[in-house]
Image (cartoon, rainbow, N blue to C red; front, side):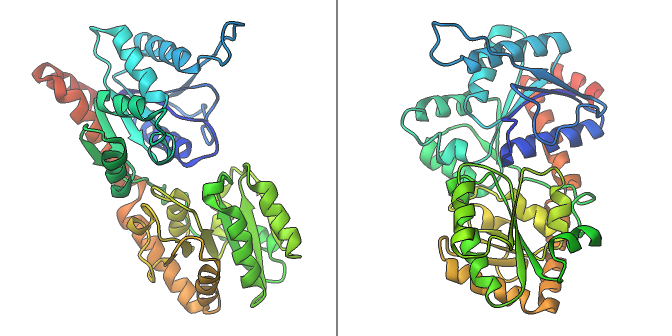
Length: 386
């Protein structure tokens, strides 16, 4: 199949999932075209079967804000026509699905199906804003297919947005061959030369991720046992988190690493992941940690209970309960045999339910279903594609 993928290229879950999906599909022989204003994070365009098409937005004195949605729609239509795309897959509803609707309207009567994958804040924050709710609902209902990354998000989309389109749940995934326990002792010794426990947090440091809470949890943990904290990522709350580390006198134990490409290595050398988010539609980094045999202490919110069984692969604690999360973290870290057993069970869960080898065929089957919706003439075409 020839698939156009549009996502935000920034350091966030939706862009990472979209990029990893494109890479996995390309490895399975599909031709993938990324359409965005910048090269997505984690995308290696030297990979066979992958092309990148930049959306350039021209500025004019008439426009207070560059009309990205219109430029994106134009580029989508252009790439679809020039490369013979079979469908467009939009990650994050606004404005991508709206632009895709315009693109397929521009190409009519040529059929260009649109699949929209909902990731979270496009529904729980942006979509629920009264200013955007009608257009969010319209873009979802006009999509030929819609997927959500958790049952929680599917329910939110129906209850909050009022979307009528049938929504299929296809969970996020992890490449279990890439994400696994690391044997990089040199990297581990670099951060923990005294064999301290390594705790890690990975996010875009937005307020909803509560990175300051991460520092406060770690502050309580390190008082009871030798430990260091890796803070991976960047965003608006980074300065507040750095201040919290200094204010608590633990700045030498907290390493703010910024955006990193070797996420699998950093998680792989860690002993515990902290994810005290205010909300999570899925929690991709929790799954990445589980695949690396790293237990997770996370908030009991959103789609996280669909990923983590509390007491099995880690613990779920009520959001903003800093003391409760610190206590659970200490329970895991103080008993190495228990921590290792939790890590093994976490890896088993990741492999059995969320590996790319399981999830990617679900997307392929969903694409085939959408392409087959226009009847028997498409059936013969799909047999030649697949």
